[in-house]
Structures are given as structure tokens and as C-alpha cells.
Image 1 (cartoon, rainbow, N blue to C red):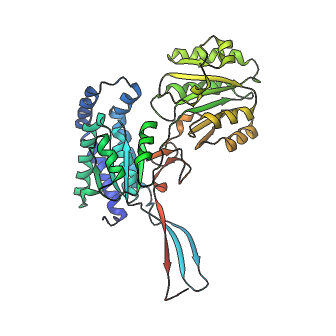
Image 2 (cartoon, rainbow, N blue to C red):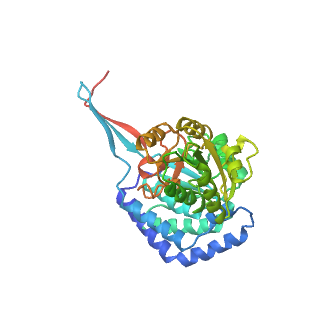
Image 3 (spheres, rainbow, N blue to C red):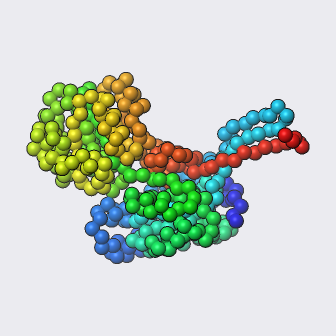
Length: 398
């Protein structure tokens, strides 16, 4: 069992790790090229997540520096009470113990998620995908060096090089105590983890995010927000998949045609519901099941609705519980939308692409939870803790 490390030690390891990544930047990028050349898959989104370039390394280093500068999430007092018999009772945040992170293709998770779990006092088990094995092994060797340089045991960070069968065995009968599992990846990975895990799982959910263009929308804002949400990065869970246009919008058909023209400039495949397809000439959707889909591709579905109530109901039925945005100049209506849409992050006149721990000021995230327990949306340092009760007495009995 690892006793919790003093915060100074945890911060020193994070700072050392940031320096090592800078020193080993070229070596890591070259090892990553081997992973990329071994990856023969057709999945464009997967390939983008697999790549480690200078921008990715910069992001890893920045997240470690931000983590090192944040206050300790462990031992924060959340509640105090003095019992009538004189006992002093307090509730404080506490580390989980050991956290298993299961993820696909993203070597930066080995740094960012590992760093968040470590800073919050936890031992980390990392189970990365086979496609990023060489990159991950290099990063874990740097973690071990950072730990050793600070006189800390390397078993705080452990890499599990398991295939699917071994992973299932470990989930069902762990060879060491695991307190929390965080799967980061597609729906199949999440379902697999939930099915076999014997301890709590935080679901890092799918996207399928919506933008609703209300009749009082500023159409210039709507256009740039939709284009940014759909095209700036297709491989992430905060990308945009669905647009709803209010048919009470004056000349909505004109805006619809302009929107299709702009999206097609980025080679986005546009599908529409019956009314949108009729107004613009794009292919119509075959059935309503497509509204449930997350695309992770240059593809979008655009539909029409005729009231705010209908927009909220449609989003709550189909969206993944991740992010939804309303474009409107009517603030009261925006607030009603934000209060009633059941998603982890709701927006007024902004792109869903901001649902991210770094963008929300958390210094990165372990995952973006679409569950409601115990934290929704980006899970930062301050959320990756459980709690415990401290009771101080002088011989009191009940």
C-alpha cells in the first residue's frame, strides 16, 4: 500500500516530468512515428488522436505545469460540525487510492490523466491501446524517471500492457485493489468496462452535441459557431454533430442554403430532415435513429423545429448528455434553454468545442463525464477525490 505523498513531492514529480518531456521531445516524436507507421487503420479520428507533434508535447508540458501550480485537492475541509457532546466532526476530501485509466490511441492521456490522478494522491494504472504502445511506454519510462529523481517509488505509475482478454480478466478479478476506473474512448470501450468492472466506473461519454438556432439568433454568430463546432477538430467528443433551426426564423431557408454552402467548403457531408432537405436539396436522413449517432467525421445532420419547447425535447431525447448550445439574442429564452437541457455543459452563443478541462480553467481533465455521479462534464483535479469523515473525541460514547 502506498501512503499518500506530501504535496511538495507530488508537485516536484510533476515539474520534473515536464522538464523530461521537453528534453525527450524529439525522441518521443520519433518513437510516435513508429506507432503511426504501424497503424494501418482507416479511422481518421483515431489517427489524429494517435499523433504526437510539437503542439501535443507543448500541451502535455503545459498541463503538468498547471497541475503543479494548483492547490492540493486532498484534505480540503468540506463541512464541519461540533456535536453537543463536544466531539469535533469534519468532512475532508481524500484520495481514491488506485485509479485505472483505460484509453485508446492518445499518448497525451498518459501524461494528462496520469498527472491529474497522481496530483490528487492516487496510484495510477494506465491501460493504453495497442496502437500507441511504443509512445506510451516511452512516456511511462519518463514518469518512472521523474519519480526516481525525487526519491519516490516507481509503482505509483504502472503501465498494463494487456490485450482484451487479459484486460477483461483484470477487470473481473483484479490482481491488486482498484478503487475507480475511468474508460476514455468510444462507446464499445465504455460498455466493455462497465460490463466487466467490479468497482465504480466514471463514464467518459460520447458527444453527439447540438446547436439550436433560435428565431432571435444573430445569424453571423450562428454560422461561425456551427462551422467551428463541426470542422475545427472532428476527432473529439466536443465536436458538433447536429443542428436544429427554428422555422420561425425569418427566411430560414436562405440561412439554411448559406449554411450548406459553407459546410460543403470544408467537405462536410450534410444530411437533413424532410423540411431541411426540401429547402436545400441535400439528401434526407433515412430514419430518426441517426439523431442518436456521434459521427467523429466530416458529417452533420440538420433539422427543423418550430418552438423552443420542441428544441429542448428533441435534444434531451437524442443528445449524449455532453454539450448543447443555443444561438439567440433573447437572454431569458437562452436561460430557459440552459436550465432545461439535460447535458453536462450548456452554452449560449458559443461553440461546444470549449467543453474541455483546460478551457474551463481546470488545467486539463481526467475525462468528460456524461454520468451524473459524482461529477458531470470535465473532471479536473478537484473532482478526482472522494471524502472521509474525521471525528475527534475525548472518550464520548453513545
